Structure formats: structure tokens, C-alpha cells
Length: 113
Image 1 (cartoon, rainbow, N blue to C red):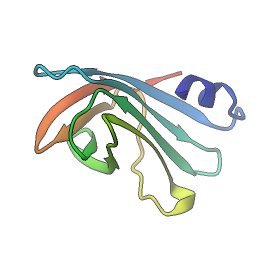
Image 2 (image 1 turned 30 degrees about the vertical axis):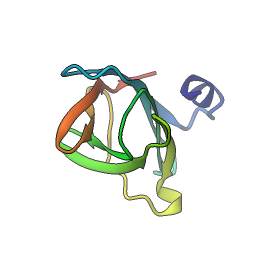
Image 3 (image 1 turned 120 degrees about the horizontal axis):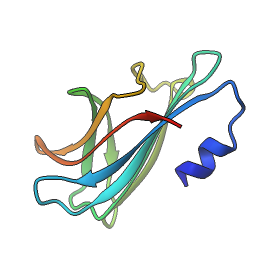
Image 4 (image 1 turned 60 degrees about the horizontal axis):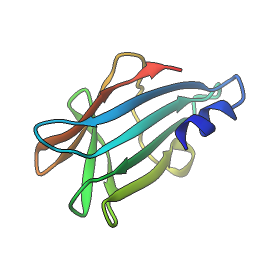
């Protein structure tokens, strides 16, 4: 889904993405996409599966960015600055962690698409 999103964007958007893999014995997986528009608008798309619990925090360079709801082991959410989400500036090389109860369960690094 994230690949389709970034391919259909106007050139003014700068897309970054991270493949998320399980760490510390967790077996979930997913992806995060971060997009910056030419007008400064920001969009964060989170897609995960195989994740237990009811919610998880998306953390960028040790700072919590957003919290996502998990339903039946899956989470799919989109956050945009145009809808009031306070998203930081993220880019190439930023580490993305998914945390639950303080533990990192998934991790990846953003790279430019």
C-alpha cells in the first residue's frame, strides 16, 4: 500500500520510507512512510501486522511521534499536518521504532524513495 501511495504523488512531495522488522524476539512487521509536501505539509503513514496489544507508539530518534490503535494484530493509520497532527521533520537516516510498554517491538530506518 505504501509503495502505491508514493508512486502516485506529485513530484513536489519528498517521500521517505522504512521497512519495519521485529526485534527482541517480536515477529511482527510493517512499514512507515513519511512525506513532505512542497507547501510544508507532512504526512505519516503507518502499516503493521502481527502485532499484539491494543496500541503502539511510533518513535522517531527516541521521540514519540504518534500512537496507533491495533485491531486484530494490525494497524493502518495516516496522520497529516493538514488535519492537525503535529509531525516533526523526518528524513533520510532517521530511526523509526515501534514501542509497546517501553519495549521496542519493530524497528527500521527511513530512506529516500
